[in-house]
Structure formats: C-alpha cells, structure tokens
Length: 114
Image 1 (cartoon, helix red, strand yellow):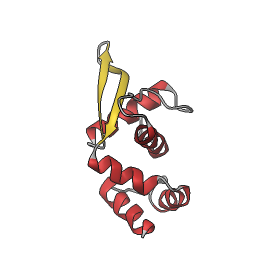
Image 2 (tube, one colour):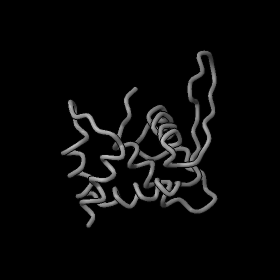
Image 3 (cartoon, helix red, strand yellow):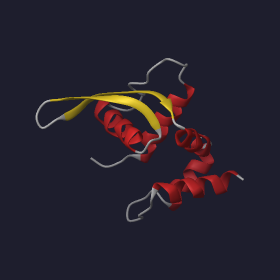
Image 4 (cartoon, helix red, strand yellow):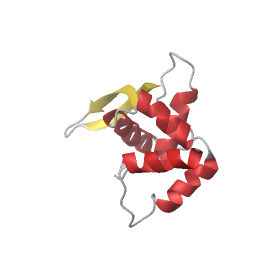
C-alpha cells in the first residue's frame, strides 16, 4: 500500500480538531485499511502520538488510535489547513513521477503561508 497524502491530511486535521482526551480511530470518507495504514505512518513519522493494534500472522494492523499531534504534527497541520495552499503543494510535489521528502514538502508549505 502507498502513502496517501490526502488521507494523511484528513487524519491530521481530524486529530487537531478532536476534543482533548478523545482518540481518533477513523475519519469519514476513509475506509479502515487506508486510515490504519496512514495513521500508523503518522506515528512512525513522529507527527502524532497513538497506538496500533496488530493481529494475525504475518502481523497486520487491525486498528490505530491517535490521541494528539506532536509539535511537528501541529506545524504540519497549520501548513495544510488552507485548501488552496494544499492544492498548490499537491500540484508541485504530490503527483505520479515526482519524488519528494516530507521535510521538503513541509518547507514548501510554510513558504506559501507567508
């Protein structure tokens, strides 16, 4: 499965707007497989804090719960909240055949905010 930056954006914004103490374990419009995979990537990238539950052999992610964004996660959320800015970034970086690293994407998003 590939990383889905639109799904990641939806998940980050959902965690940012969730009430304190409420875990985010799904987002409307995303099926469980896509949510769990991309939410786990947010934990691995240290953008969010949460836990993953695995089952089966080989282990597969059966559920991910996120409860807060990290400092870097908040920076990313602030950079992606504007739909116009997000669409500009997608046009430039997030398309087939274009390779990018997350720090480069984040710096580009920040430059559009100013």
